[in-house]
Image 1 (cartoon, rainbow, N blue to C red):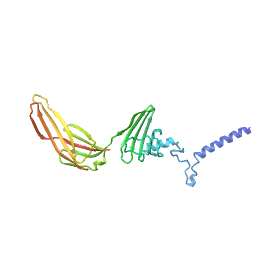
Image 2: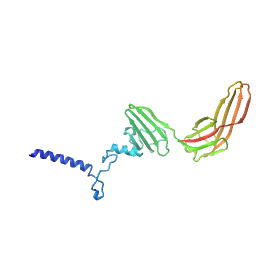
Image 3: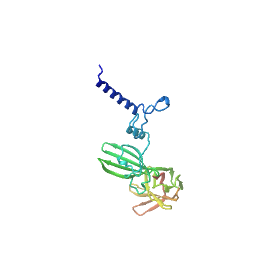
Image 4: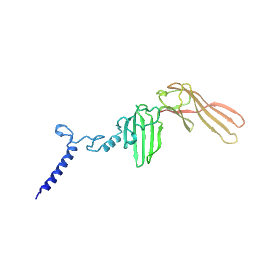
Length: 255
């Protein structure tokens, strides 16, 4: 026998289910009317997934979520964000409050890592903290754009981009099986750059050798190899100079 109290309890349960359906499955409308039968999830509203799951899906797809200007990136959960004017942002003077910065936030237990990419320049910075204590405070992360790949020991090299667009230049060079690289920050027309490979022989007649290449930019896209020589000398003061064997293999622009 159904009592009044049982009926009231049943009505409450039915109303509760009706509200749940209205806020989820039926909230989008009727399929017949070409409306969605489910609420569309976004970063603020739950539909077939909650906002956190929606952010994770966007992040997994490589998308960045726009946050309000001035949002503190260090207060956000794990994900990818685009923010203008975060109070905690790369502290380089070139990164102003007007720059769009893209943040990749990774959080695991007490560890947090944030990689910030300045949208207009591509420059990247690293922030890291452990147990809420800063261990890396927006350190600059160099990236490299390949400008030349080959083997050249004389003449000129033309690169495809204006070198003044980069922070500096990285040169990879070799002497036989010996390979080295060097980075230069200062970029000025006619400034000389030096690539050196030193070595020595062993035995009764010990010689020292110094392979040296000198080069410079004649303009913002042209590198001139001025000289490539090898200077040999021994302990008795004998010195001779011959053609060098330094070869440029890679040139990168430092972003």
